[in-house]
Image (cartoon, rainbow, N blue to C red):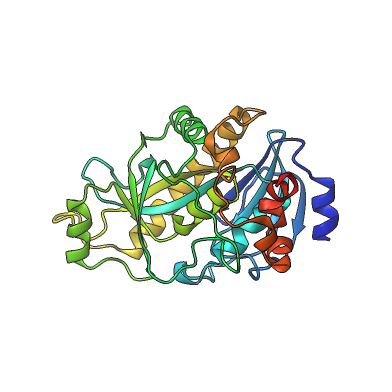
Length: 299
């Protein structure tokens, strides 16, 4: 079924991927809904992809942690998730995430559109370029500036308190930070803390997919002296409120995407592949064809 679908859905029109984090497990309002299960060279994605149209735009929705929130942050198959999006023809990915606030000015319930990441994960594969191929993409600016601006404007339009820009520090999890760690990260000037957007953003850039984060603060981590430590009950309550806002913002944002991409994301691999074509193993060429195929043809 996946091969039939991908043949019918080439990159002839805009397709948006939505990766739903904690609290966002489905997208209401999708029309012409279809469920597609994909196999990838990297294993199974978190769940089946839910395909449909939202405000006339093609959508591929994936619950990051699987239906029922079954998969821990450290156990997510990030490569399979992003590869699946690429195979379906996705050009834009909105990663919806619950985060902790690391600044007094970012209150629980506020929306943040980060523009930088700090990677503190330790056990995750963060590249497609193994197994006989080397590629070095630029991550100086790790999110798509076009998509970030659209999400920022959409957040304002739906009435959210939204901050454009800021640094997201990604920790391994699934445990929350110690108080000492939280204070250390604060001293680095980070804005929010989460467990899932790395290596998601890195892999999206390697796949030449525009990526941006729609992050909702649910708590003050454990650095705040008066707010109290992270409470799952409070987090779930704020998540429920934030999820409604996220869905409205996404509905607005998908209508504003340009028909043609002119950002750096769309050509991230143009000069990134180092390995000569004849030295890339045949299996690697086949496995990565959705990502590198166009460059091998012109090599």
